Length: 381
Image (cartoon, rainbow, N blue to C red; front, side, top):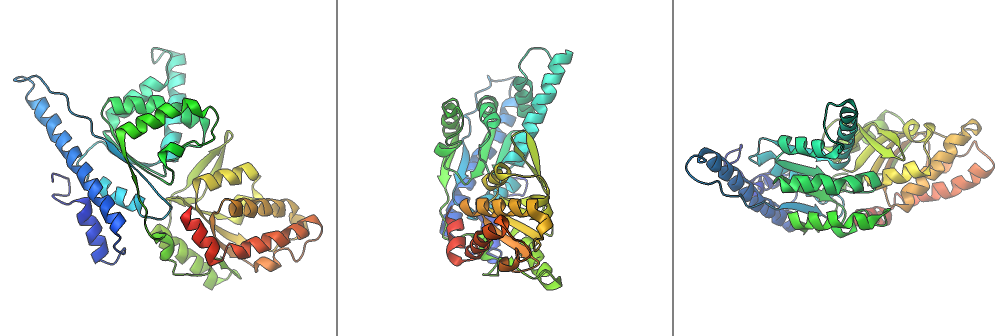
C-alpha cells in the first residue's frame, strides 16, 4: 500500500493500539478498520491513475477515473468512529486533504459565501452566485474531506449542503464522515425538509453507509465509574475534575468552539468530539436561554460544568438559568460531569420562593443524572 507512512494500513494502526493497551480489541471496530483499508486501496489506486494519466497524455487518450465512494459511519456516541477515521486520515496518501469537525467546516463555508457575496457586489467576482466560486475553490484545495460529528440542524446548512456537495462529488472529492445519526434521519423534522431529501440520496449514492455497533461507550469506560458530581470544590476535587477531562479528550486542553443559534454565537471554551467544557459563568451568568441550551444538546453529548455555586437570593436570574439548563440536559439525556461548591441538595439553601421550590426538582434530577441507569441510557442514545 503506497501511503505516506509506507505500507501501514488502518488495521495495522488499530492493532498497534490494541497491543499497546490504548484500547480493548473490539470485533466491530476492527471490521470498520478493514473497511477503511479497502477505501485506502481505492484512494491509492485513484492517485496512481491520475499520475499515469497526466504523464501519458501525449501518447494516449486520458481515461476517466472511476469515482471512489467514501464512507458515512454512524452509531451511538463513544464507539470509536472518530478514532478509526483519524487512523485512516493519518495514512491516506493524499496531499490535499482536510479533517474537520462538521460545524467548524460549515462556519467556514458560510464565512466564505459571505465574502463571495461582497466580492460579487464590488465586481471582484463575476456572476451572481456566491456558492459556485466557494465550491470551485474547495475542489481545488481538497481531494479528501473527513468530517467528524456530521449532523444537520440548521436550515441554512441544510439548504447549502446539496449544492456544495454536488460540486464536490462531481469533481471526484472523496468524503468520509462520522455521525450519531442514520443518514435517513438527518435534519429530521426540519423546516422544508423535503428540499433536503435529494442531498440525503446523493450522500448515500456517493458514500457507503456503515453502522458501528459496539458494546459500550469507550470514552466513558476510561473514567472507571468515578463520581460525576464532585463537591466541595477544593484542590482535590479540582484535580479529579481536570483529570477526568484530560482522560476523555486524551490531552491537557481542547480547542474552543462556537455554536450558532438563531443568529447568535455561543462560545464554548473547550470542545472535543461531542464533549464540551464550560464554567458556571459561561452557561448561567451569560444571558442564555432554553433554545441555547437545547442547541448545545444537539451538538454535545457530554458536558463538563465547573464551579457551580450555592445560590444566594441576589442570584435569581442565574438560578432560573441553571434550573432550565439542568432540565434541558436531563430531558435530552446529556451526560453531565459537574464540579460544585456544595452538594446538589444544598445549592438553594439560601433561596426562597419559586426558585427554592423548583430547585427540589433540580436536585432530584442532578441525583438521577449520577445513576448508572441514566449514564447507561446516555450511552445508548
